[in-house]
Length: 292
Image (cartoon, rainbow, N blue to C red; front, side, top):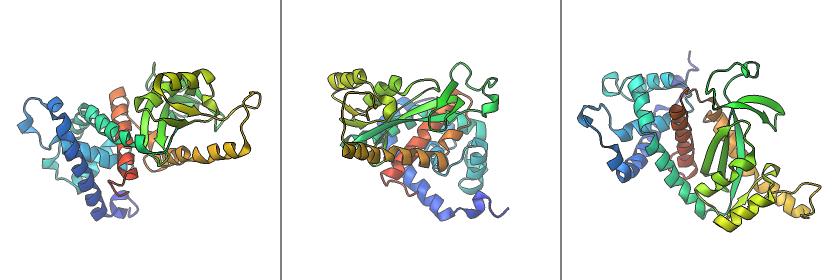
């Protein structure tokens, strides 16, 4: 019993994290306040900035269950009378999803001033491998793909992510699991273009590199295969391998601490809101705006 989250967590630290997130959201939200106008605003139990801050705080603390997170909020941060009930809270989070996405995008623009960016993909498994041929979750969207690192098949989605050398997430795309990395590469790197990008062997394509440079002025470097005529020195290969490690570290943190592969949403809007919330919470930590 004593190992439960509400016994082991430092309440003062949670209050400090919530205050920092609320301060950030309160500064950003007036820029898009015109899109949040609706009727009966005076009947809301909590303002939009509070709902967004609570949503981000839950992702920062690694909660995967919205029911468990709502129970924690009304037991530790707000009284039951001053906070929306669970289903209403979840509906408001989804309705404010565009605001969360906009704020994350504004933070991601800061990555254009960083030295370089790295692109890679992360498999998001939606069910156990034994159920992959009869799973119903996200049917018609998710499919069966191959995880190259584990050399196994999985049913789910694939997150294509671009991060800077300091670990700040920039552009991202979620596709079906069978989508090849090269197919989503252009979309990921042109959302918030960075002049210098690195990728692994899954992105090898001279046509893609030429198109990115000619149309978007984006330089994209990848290792070469053994049968290619392009020669690269051993020093260059080691440098590329060392610089690409940053995205492996980011994926490890997102999976272990933020539970990005354990999103339980059953709707597209719920999944997207949860994903943007996780990336926004991680971006705030990377930029030092919130203490982890």
